[in-house]
Image (tube, rainbow, N blue to C red; front, side, top):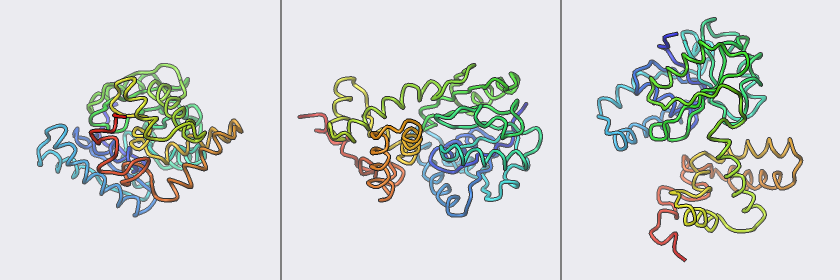
Length: 299
């Protein structure tokens, strides 16, 4: 299929990035979210992305404006999906929310529309039947800061049509991604199979009071040469996402450490509006986080 009209469902940090990157590469994009407030926040994010593309990619003012003009916004799902060749879902990492969304989407989207989930940890087979079109459903997972960290993991489930899979690989390349095909389902794909346990280990060190945020990040960076520590990465990922993953793990395992960690993330960060870099504060304060200070890695 030659995709022309793309709908991105979910206008959070990554959803807005997916929408803008897709529009930047010449596609007509509709952004869907549940209310006007969410749409307004997405419009603000996209306005800021224009500056990033000029700074990081050398894009011209004309190019960034043209990309923005290729994006429309919608709070009515039926209207958002009405002409879509592809719907990319980037809604919260909560199984019940995604299940409900796909049942609603499957009922209103055209028969030819392909659905792709950007889920970080949940498998496409969990939602395939709810879509009403399992052969036209698969995963398309992006990394945050999409215009720089331009990976796209395309993962099929047992019922995905191979032609649909190959079409999505081609689409990922068309929007400037390095396409990474996965032919078998794997929770966490490649990136998060490596990243989530790493971030979780750091969070558990914190919640068990083994050490503090700065010391944990400092240890990792000095010992490995990495540019960011785990808590700086969590600020980029977003603390809501981290909370949803930990909350699900607490429910599944009954492990009190995960419950304590979920409570910490909610009460000390989410409830206080400290959601990460996107809100100006998370484990660090932005735009001048402590880990950028010249002496951060010193004793």
